[in-house]
Length: 103
Image 1: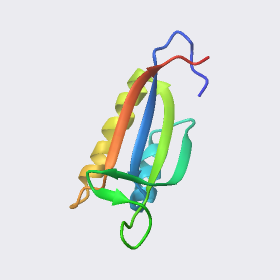
Image 2 (image 1 turned 135 degrees about the horizontal axis):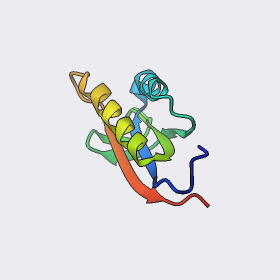
Image 3 (image 1 turned 180 degrees about the horizontal axis):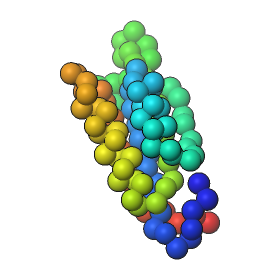
């Protein structure tokens, strides 16, 4: 993740249904993302309902955090949305993008 301090940096936070873990990581790896942080087993409430990993609210999310330059951020978002569109029943994927400064 060592990028020039001159480049505008973005932080992508991608929350996705853990059922699509393999497809998500294949997509990220195909883009040659050089670094990320991943969190597993996140609980939450969103467009696909409550996820708490129990019989009443089954399912969990994973979270990817990626710091990259602006053009790569656009490529990542586009590729993730294309991957998502290949499913008949669209899996829950939420992406936040914010400007960041690496300190």
